[in-house]
Image (cartoon, rainbow, N blue to C red):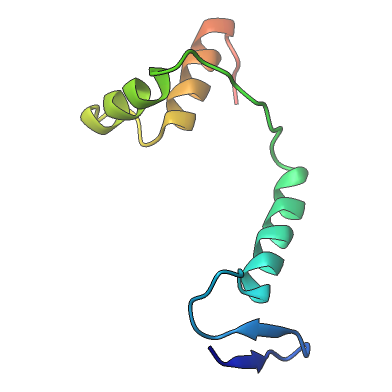
Length: 83
């Protein structure tokens, strides 16, 4: 496993290993900061087995692209949210 430095002088792993790449960690952090002003995070808890059923439904459906999209659409229709 070799180490390199990016333009900021941060050390990151160049081969796969147990640690995440520093640049990936920074990308995730920057994305989280950007999304903080655009979306609200809501934790949704469902009974065991529902998650897999929702994934299967979305995969078989041509109406939805993701479970998140399906949930947002259902909430939007139920309470009449207009974008």
